[in-house]
Image (cartoon, rainbow, N blue to C red; front, side, top):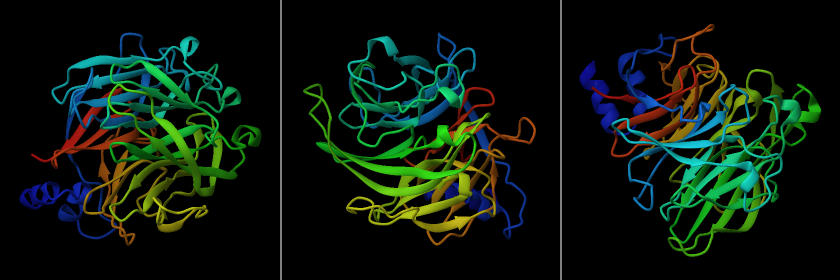
Length: 369
């Protein structure tokens, strides 16, 4: 059985270890091999790690293969007030890459700073992170926020506000070197006014960026297209906001979206070229082993990987919607694993899957033996 598990991992279909170890959709959660890499808590005490991104190239303070992690909460555990991004080596050495001071931003960011799962690192050295800020950790004070553009040494050089950005919650990027497409989910369109009721106004934006060469000029948004709309979203006292979260782009140009409030994975076809919204997209899969899917990524072979906010499980899904048995990444708390998982990212060269564990504020690695 372990030989089968290792073969599947090496092939890149990471969570398919479940398919190699269990038979049938009713199989119990698989016990994975997990290594704790490091604590994600920086010197100022920020907690609740959300975004995860692997550095593609060394430039400035960024080192290829290291992992950036954004923190959503401050030391007092207030949501939407985290201001730090840490850089972690594969061997567990931690440094603070950036502290984002809301008093010294180069442009507007409505509401201030509360760093979300929307985190991408471009090959040119630019780091882009979403901000969905609050004043006191409650949804009642949540504001639209912005995208923050940091240089390779962690300095905020630009803010991108407006353009339909309203509570940027997660993000993935198609990086072409001299330009990039950002795919950003937004969860604050009418959500706060809904006061806990479901509002079907969540969006997915494609933001076309012109990328200046390393250190020369700034990335500039050239066009924004709403490619997804009508996603359910609501405020939540524990999660702050529940709405469309993780996004992953397939090699065929389909954007997969973790539609958290509807407990499904959606597909937006032709995401790179479409000129109008696909609405909430088509349903790849719903319910089954899904339990509030949050972070999401895709493998080169097209497998969709997502983590549940409701039970601490990782679920693998084929493009035709077949779910593999769940892989338990966190079993702490009551119910087991609830509220522990968020951002995920593949480790290069079939090295496993990085994930943040909010239950103990760590970066961990799911890997083969």
